[in-house]
Length: 320
Image (cartoon, rainbow, N blue to C red; front, side, top):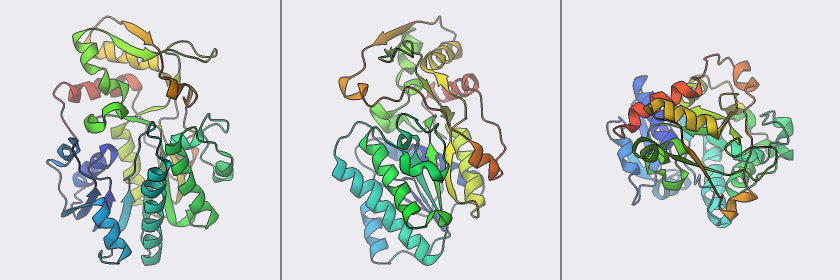
C-alpha cells in the first residue's frame, strides 16, 4: 500500500494516474475535498481508499494506519498569495514533520514536495546543492514554509532518508480547480481561443521587458515521469530540482498558445497587483545536475510541444 497525500490535487492526481498506468492501484489517497471541483481529478482513477487530511493526520498520530510501502507527500497549501503564516506552518511544516517522523520510524521511503519558491530571487542560481540551502531567502510565506521543512530535514540529518522535489512552474491537465493558482496557459485559454488575446503582467525590473520575465515552465507529463523514477529508486535520496533546466519568457508562452490555436498573436500588458510587485520572481531556471547524476536521463518536452499537447486537453477540459 502506498500513501499519496494531495492525491486529488493537480500534481498528486496526475501522479496517481501514472501509478495506475504502471499497474499500481493499492493506494490510500489523502486530500481535503471541499467546495472546489478538485474531486473530479479522482474520476477514473484506481485506489483502494480515500481519507480527508485531518482524519488521516489523527490516525497517524494515534498509529492507526497500517504500515505502507512508501509515503508520497504532495499535500500542502500552494497558494503564493495567502498571508496566514500560522496556517502555512501547521499545514505545510508541522504536518510534514509528523508524516516524515512516522516514515523514518517505520523505515519506509518518504517523498515530499518542496518548491522553487524556496529560492527567492535566485541569488544562488537555483542550485539544489544542499550546501547552499541555508543561504536561501524565499520571497513569500509559502516558499518560507517549504524552506523550513527542507532545513528541518537538513538540521536533523534526515535528508539521507527522504526525497524532496523542488517543483518549478508546472502546468498541464488536472489543474482546472486551482482558480487563481492555475497556469496562465489554463487561465487564458478562453481569451486566446475566443478573443485572440492574452494578458500578461508588465515588468517593473529594467532588466526585463514586458512579458520578458523568465520562468522554467515544465509540463506535468514530464514531471510525473521524473517522480516515478525517484519513486522506483528509493536509494536516490536528497533534494532534487524538477524543471526543464531551460528558462523561457512569458512572451514565449503566449506565442506558443497562439500557434497552438492558429490565431494571430495579440498580447496586452497589464499592471501587476501591488502585493506581488516586491515578491515576484523575474527569473527561474532549475539546475538539473542532481537528477541527472541520480540516473534520470529522459529528455523534457519543448515548451511549444507541451503547450500544443495541453491544448488537446483544454479543448474539452479533459483529465489525465
